[in-house]
Length: 138
Image (cartoon, rainbow, N blue to C red; front, top):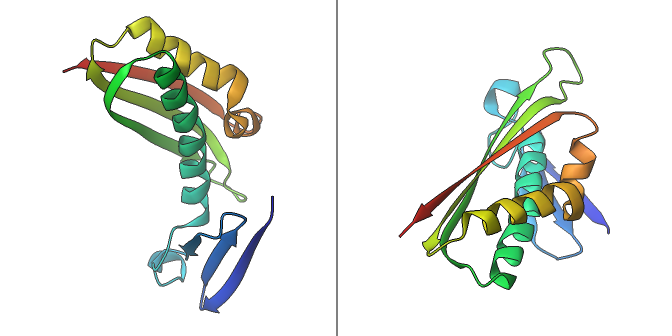
């Protein structure tokens, strides 16, 4: 896997990886940036969410669960001193659908957490990660 960041101006960059999609990155205004892109630590948190979300939705699809809506809510606390790493991360999976099996959702989350998601495995070495899920029937 490769990625490239190209400086635009100030603290703004354009990120491109193997998939060829461009992602704007920038620092927040309060930290000297222009607020014209995703803050890098936000990108890491979203990457974790995307990693586990893709696992869970794929597993639920294979289990023939009729998911109509799926969200992951993430919250991260950071150290107060530099390098201000994530110390605690909370992930809440919100799965909506018809006739969803709560045990199937729990198993999908468990498999992502403990077997499939490399983002979870990496970040767990630095931060405590707590997960929860909600199943909402339609």
